[in-house]
Image 1: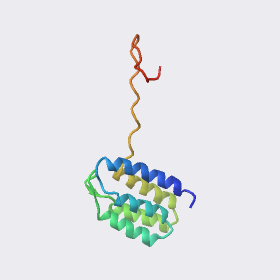
Image 2: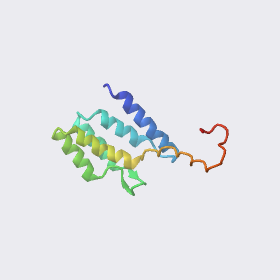
Image 3: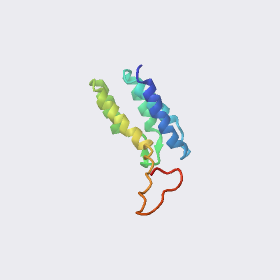
Image 4: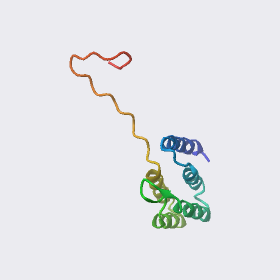
Length: 120
């Protein structure tokens, strides 16, 4: 598959964010397997069922709720993979929100000298 590298990079970034919260990576492993197995609808449904049994403390509910699981499976059965990917991506974002970009330093006040190593 040509986008394996991009999937690997995506999930590596998500793992870095989870490591700081000491959360398990099992769900991310399942999400990655689902993304690479969208052609096997029964396997996707089983993995989504397993994610539905796992708790997401950020949402105070299952990682994938029943309604979302059904919507993903129905989208795949109807041949709408992009829609299923979007729904799956929303689940991943709720479980492991992307890290915010680093904050830029505030602009120097007029007449203030920059610290060594700071851009001018």
